[in-house]
Amino acid sequence: MTNITPVAPTLAVVGLGHAYGGIDDTTIAETGPAAGTSKHARTGTVVAAWDVSFDVAGGEALGVIGESGSGKSTVMKSIAGDIMPTTGRVTLQRGDGTTAVITEMSPAEIRALRVNDLSIVHQNPADGLDLRITAGGNIADRLTAAGWRNFAAIRERAAELLTRTEVPLDRMDDPVGSFSGGMRQRVQLAKALANTPSVVLLDEPTTGLDASIAAGVLDLIRGLLDEFGLAAVVVSHDFSVIEMLTQRCVVMQHGRVVEHGLTDQLLEDPAHPYSQRLVGAARA
Image 1 (cartoon, rainbow, N blue to C red):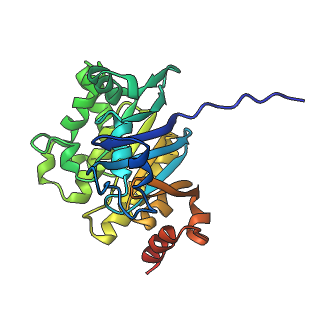
Image 2: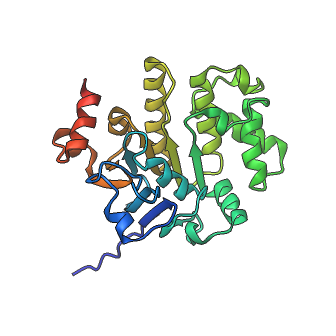
Image 3: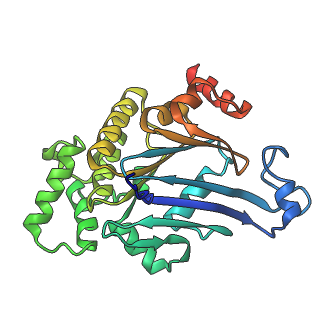
């Protein structure tokens, strides 16, 4: 009999929780989906997320879906190191095979991680780009932060990434502020992929885009995730986005995971009433 060694997930989130205010067992018990709120009535504590666990392997995209206030943004910020959670652990397998425990890292260590191993594609491209400089310059910023110094090599890499994200090379030296929303999002994707990260976080990647432009961006993202074999987490309130990009998903409501499973199965036969409502809205 052949022994098969399990492959460690590229990203693992275990027991993640974050609360704004004092926390105890009563606060946890009296918030969440059953209580219909993430804010404790007596203390005012907001349990933004609690007991959230999932993992993502390389080449896989996992969706985190829920309406505003569901906790999905808190989970994303905890993975990115923007906030330190109240409890739980987030680990990432770097490209060199070492493990980063994001929930135990200093701000400087997190900044370095986000240059090389963890990229974020923001809902608003202005949060991930410097609109005052060129498309090529935005990518060059990420490369030089990682130690690239040869101008010709940097420019060649920028041109390669812009081509892959379908940004015309004759716009490479134009300020990003002159681009349309969809084109800015493509440049942000190019910048996020610059140093071939292990994990990419996509936060509402098509919000604010016209439907036809959003569809093109989603097609592009799906192709790039397959091409680069990244582990991806896609946060959205829209099941149609989750359907297009992910293989598995978790559904969050009032800071808790209420359902998880294969995306196609959840879309076909959601078990939780909240999931049913989200699927119904996506199908409308």
